[in-house]
Length: 159
Ligand SMILES: [Zn+2]
Image (cartoon, rainbow, N blue to C red; front, side):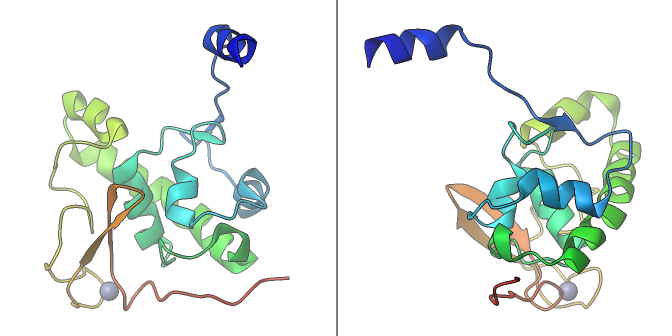
């Protein structure tokens, strides 16, 4: 036990791949997160798989890709991974463009409430796609924002 603690303390934390500025394909996203059983929103926060997705971006990316943040990662279909790959970069760059430089640090930390988000911190406000109210729920102690209409929960296993 003691040895393990000592070793892990001095071993640099393994960090995952960058998602920006290069485009990542759907197959890359699928392979990066393959077999993880937690929900997709929690999975996206795993810094040992992908660096830089904080709590805000995880909600924003799920919304842009029309994926329920509560869907189990191992049931995400190729079509859904492709949609994530096709939307995340545009969403990220739109947020970066709209925010002042000093706020970007907050963005990646997952705190602060800038105005350029489509769902984050917008509980009860109309969804920019369909007009239904944005939902908010705690997920592993962090706030998740989503549109239940645009991001229906898919529970079927994908073989
Ligand atoms: Zn909607």
